[in-house]
Structures are given as C-alpha cells and as structure tokens.
Length: 355
Image (cartoon, rainbow, N blue to C red; front, side, top):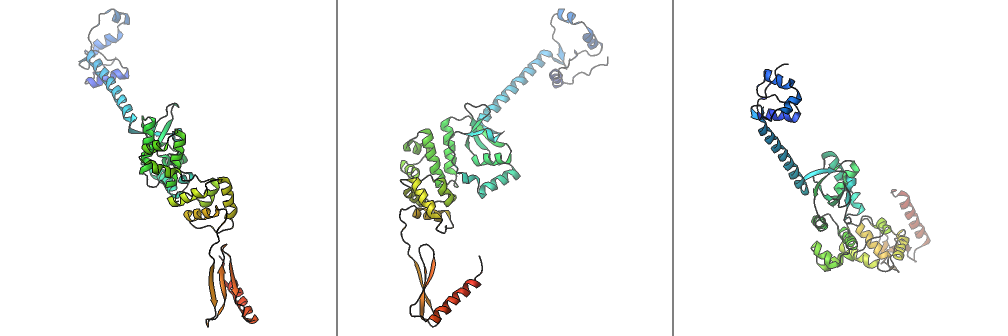
C-alpha cells in the first residue's frame, strides 16, 4: 500500500474529517498500514488513546470542527435576523404577494404610458427598487405587500420574480408603511387618495378621527376627501382617467350625483350622444355635471353679422346651444342676391377640404 501523504496542517486535517476520509496516525508508513489492517475488535478492546491529525491532537481538531459548526449556525441566525429587519432582498413569485389592505391605485394606473415605461425598464434593466412585504400570517409561502404594487404588477406581466424586502410587521406597521409611501408619492391623485381612504375606513371600520390620526391629516380634510365621489363605470367611460380631476371638479361631481345616482347616470348617458365631447378629462367632467341637471340651462347663442364688401349687412350667422349653425338673411334682399349668396355657400362647401 503506498504511503499516504501527511496533512500539511490543521486545515487539511479538518478537510479530511469533513470529507469522511480516514486520517492515519502521525507515524505514517508501516504504522499506518498496520493500523488499517488491524481487526475492528482489537481496536474496540484497546483503551482510548489520544490520536494526532496533521501534527495536532484529535481533540483539538474536534474542538475546531465544533467551533466552525457553531459559527455557521450563528451566521444563519444572523442572516435570518437581517431578513426579518429588511436588510436582505429576496426574489418572490408575484402571485404569492397578496394585499392586506385596499389598493391605493385605480385600474388606469396599470394601463398608462408611465406604467408601460416601468414594464419596459424592468424588462431591459432589471428591478432597481425592491418592494416591501411581510410574511403572510396564515398562508405558507405567501406574503402581504406594504408598498410597490406597480412593480409587483410589472414583474407579474413580465413573468419574472419580484425583488422584495421581507420584514416582520404587525398590522399597524404595515398600514403605516403603506400610508407613508402613499403620502410621499407626488403622482398619487386626489381621486386615488379619497378612494383608498373610503375603502380603508369601510374595511377596517375606522372613524374619520381614527383615519386622520393614522394618516397625519386633520379630521376636516379627511371628511372633505371622503365626500369626493366614487365614479360609476359608465361615467368613467365618458370622462376617462379620473386621476387628473381637480378638487373643485370632483366636489362639483359629488354634488351633481347626490341623490338618485342611477337615474342621474341614465340622464347623463342619454344626453351625452347629443353633444361634442371636450378634449380633456376635466372639461368632460364639467360637461357631465351640466348634463346631470334635470333641465339643461339654455346657452348663450353665438351670433355674427354678415356684410358685403361695401359694408352693407345682408344677414346673420348663428350657432345655437346644440352646436348647430344657421344663416339668417336680411328681409330686404332681392331674389337674385339671395340666389347669389346660396350659390356662394354651395361653392364654399364643395371646395372645402375634407376632414
């Protein structure tokens, strides 16, 4: 049997032990060969003798081994503590990251150009900022989100895991983190804030004073936000994205929808097809406010005089409150003059560029 190499130092001896290799006593050569060939019963009958590994007593090797195992256990415990304190990020399946409290985003927040840019950025560059979650109190391998819902949704659509900081949070801490991010985000609209507060108050049975205390707002301002309307889907379809709406417009909408909301919405949708929609959400909301009234007030019509080149008035150009245009010709015009004007209008219509 060839002579085994003697471990050079204690570390090599430890490597042999962890690898499960037998380590020859410190004599080497024939002594090692005799030790390997001796019967096991003879070994058992001998009194225990202190062996040596790599020039070090075996008991010292065992002490070093136990020390390394303890250190490894301490490192694992420290890692778990860091995770619980939110100092380590992990990758989670977005489908296992659930909501504890009502969402503070409207569906339009996951369909606008800013969200599309976020999805593209994460797809091309990865997720820079982790979300914040806590372990789910009752469902294994699931979590509850404190903030980062748009990042979670972006990762879900991309079919990739979401980077998250996991912290041990109670309900109060979870809500406080959610509210703090809620208040610090400048892009969160008045409509979304009011919607979130209304849903939170209903879900958690909170009074106006309790919500104000948790959010750091005065009860008066909370009451004002809670009076803002939750727009029905038919009105969202007409107005569009409600996030740009101002406080003044939202309060006017709330007043217009006060009472029989269903009948009011029917009245608005029935009249909407008869007008030309405005270009912005806020302007369309003001149109909705006007259409919600039982009787639409007559608008001031637009009138303009029509004159010949010599300054003589030959009629009046008018637009009524429904947006229709008409020409009223002067009563003293000769038939030939009237025919000439009609022909001029016809030619102008025929030669007008099509849109």
